[in-house]
Length: 339
Image (cartoon, rainbow, N blue to C red; front, side, top):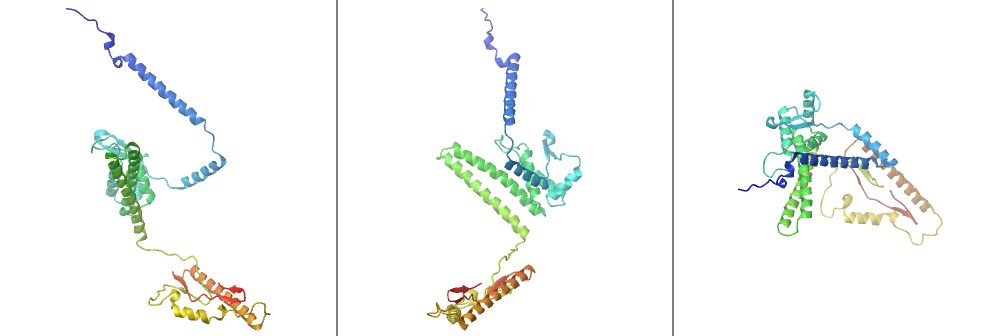
């Protein structure tokens, strides 16, 4: 019977405590060296220039003027479940802040929304099935910030704000997966199918987010549409009407409720639109002086009408201002006057 001496090479190096400690110590030293190198790199950065420093000061003032958003800590306690709590000891005050952020007095609604947001913002990147994910405090507080920033007035607006926050989280993940699909797959077979599915989902979530914002806007507006009149033009010979105006339709009706033949008649009968042949170079006569006086009077009437209309708008009388009537041009010789 022969005996064989054990070969030292049969022992695995990772089972040797000395070798394992040495490898661990080497890894820690390498990480420490990398952190120190990165710290030195950050320390070598130059200070901001005067323009950037001024913008930083403006941003600091605007940020401090904003109300701080509500946030919570999330801790997974294993068999005890996931617990969310504030970073201060005033639990009752924190509950009031949550109720105000969700626009309600119902604690049940607040608890239901927090539970739903917690599950909707869980991290499933390491899961391959439908098992519960790990809590993600960053996304959870980001969703709370969105809801608090919308300032919902009731439970419906709070749900819409929560839907917008969750839609944005899913949308960003879909965009990232779509970009990864573009970079890592060939445009054929399963690659193009995967890209098509991700692209369609991304487009649907983008449209869904826009529809949610529009729904929130319509609810707050209560279906009303406000129209503001900023400029009013009243021409010579016209009238400014303050109030609701309805126009009659019909055959031949044109702008300013004048029919075609009426406009043609007014144009041909206007003595200021016609120029007498051979009038250039003549000495000023009584007729020319009368024309100039009529032009001055028309300009003065136009200015007065505009002032009246502007005063009515400034006093809040009515909500619609329109101008009716023709817009004549007064011409004599080579000059023209209109308003």
